[in-house]
Length: 325
Image (cartoon, rainbow, N blue to C red):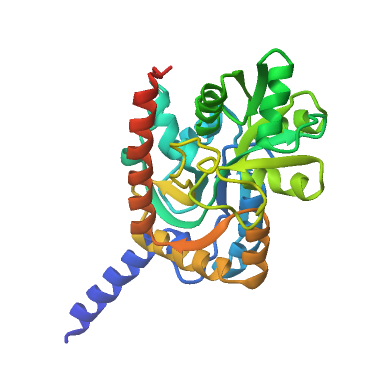
């Protein structure tokens, strides 16, 4: 090989290496990785993000920071992800609501997950639940129904976001038991929980991670869970199906997403790091203790789960007669 040809190949390889974002290079140095969270500090999703970020920084060898962009059920954070450079430095930690539900219930969400985002990897599934505040005398679902009826058959139930799975659940519960239940939407689970702890609202529907800490402390009571099986974190709480409430067996998910166009090398690197992190016993115990069913989902598996979940809820929402707002 001639000197000129060898020099040309060396320069070409160097240029290709420089073209990769710092995030995708082996050293892991460069700007911090930013994990967008669509809900305020103090809620379940925020706690999950901070648990993962603390260990991802070691696995990736660079700073990882949580950036809370609360509001509109994660819509603000999703729009921020869409606007972010596809250089591998911005990720979005989200559950089903923002990725699968918002586009079904909002006319102009400002993003299209199929076009604007790319799945990175999933790490857990979970279920939603009905919980009662400490000031509510009921301790079970039947007791709650009787109590609401004694109050004139009307009641408000908190939900962490409008037009969400929890809001649809409130409607179905009311229909099942002949109650006039009104969903009271909050800007995330943290303010909803604050009102439940302050007995400003008698009940709430949200995720197990949102409720588990205060449930264990005896400050609220989880009395029913969605999904097809009882949950280890709250084994005494029956499923909605056991109570005769159908339509809530689809299990929501948690995953990381990146802007469309993010280099595959960057996506793969985060996926490997995430699989390492959730395999750590302390991380798995922490997430399991928060009510998550921990399990790694590859980029392809997360994409498949996202599509199936979206299709299932598209049918439910259409059947409910709900019109996108």
